Length: 181
Image (cartoon, rainbow, N blue to C red; front, side):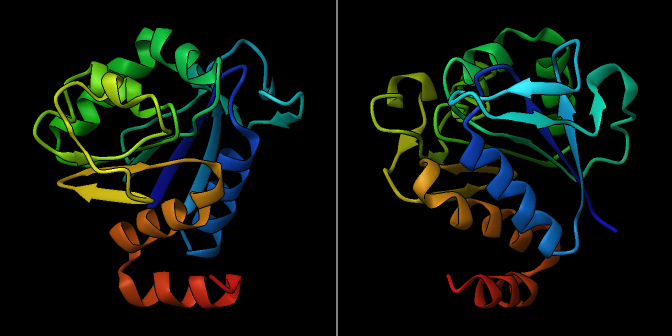
């Protein structure tokens, strides 16, 4: 079974986190929600508390097929400030495995240099954080082993792009049909 890890930082965008987790699980992907804070309960940007499956230090990421960053503010900045996560993302990216970020969170990937010369998308006005990417403004972009999404209203498209990358188009289409997307 394919494995994905979704990371929560204080101030994450709730729709992007929960929507992505739901789509991945519907797609048959073992999805673990990971808190980068000291607590399993993480407060989102709109004061919704979400309980993570595990704390960052409790997880073995060696079999990760995808690492996923929901956006939101200040959640994206908090993800970007967490050096152990950035080291993990670099290891994943360098191994040619999937990394994905939506909304403001592509700023983490941009800062790590993952987007240089790649097509990428993000929440409007965050394009300067994409660091030499080809900013398209599309709902979702998949380029190499990087998936980026534009924002909360397009979370299903983002999640489905990850499902397609890990499980194939047929399963992604089946999930989309069930979601009426």
